[in-house]
Image (cartoon, rainbow, N blue to C red; front, side, top):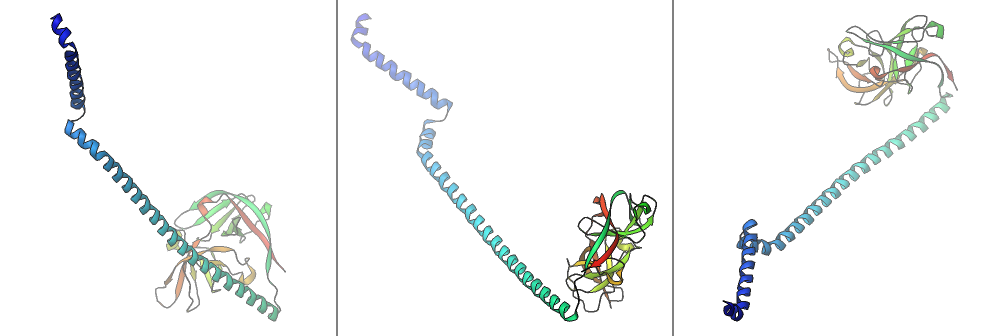
Length: 279
C-alpha cells in the first residue's frame, strides 16, 4: 500500500481533486439551473441587457416627443389666448378713447362714488323655500336703514337691507324673491331688471328680465348695477350670465345670473349707508 501511494500518490490526489471539483459543480448547478440552461443564460444575457437598454431609450424618446407635442399644443393655445387678450385690450383702449371723446363733446364728467361704509359681521344665514336672507350685527344705532346695499370687500353685491333693529338687521340677498334692482350688462351696456325668482332661488340664481329685443348676450357676461334712479350706486357686481332663455311666449328673452358673492361663505360684509357722486 505504501509502495502504491509512493508510486501513484500524485495521480490519486489529482483524481480526488477532479472529483471534488465535479461534485461542487454538480451541487451548484442542481441548486440553480441545469448546465445547458445556465450556458444559454450566459450567452443571452448580453442580448437581454442590450434589448432592455434599447427599449428604455425608445421609451424615453417617445415620452420626450410626447412632452414636446404637448408643449407645442400648450404654446399654440397660449399664443391664441394672448392674441385674444391683446385684441380685447386694444378694443378696450379704443372704447375708452371714444368714451372720453364723447364726454368732452357732451361736456360730461366721469362719475365716481364716495361710499360711506359700515363693516358688519354675519350672525345668521337663513334659506327657506320663501326667502334667502342674512342677519348682521349692525342696526339703527349704527346708521343703518332699510334699503341700504350690502356688498363684499370686492364690491360684489350681496343684497339689500330689509328689517332693521337697534343693533341688528336682516339682509335680503339678491336671489330673494322680494329683491329687484336695475342692472346692466357690462359688455353690451344692455339694461334690464335683476330680480329673484321662486324657481331659481333654491339653485342660488336670479333672473335678468326686460332685456331689449335683439340683445346679443354671452355666457359669462358680467352684470352690474345700473345706478339709474340714484337709489343704488352703479357698477356693483351682481354676477355673471349663466344662460339666456326665452320666456313662455317665446317673444322675449331673459338671462339667468349666477351671483358673484358666495352667501354661504360670508362672515363679514359692508353696508353702504350713503354714497355721493364726486368728480
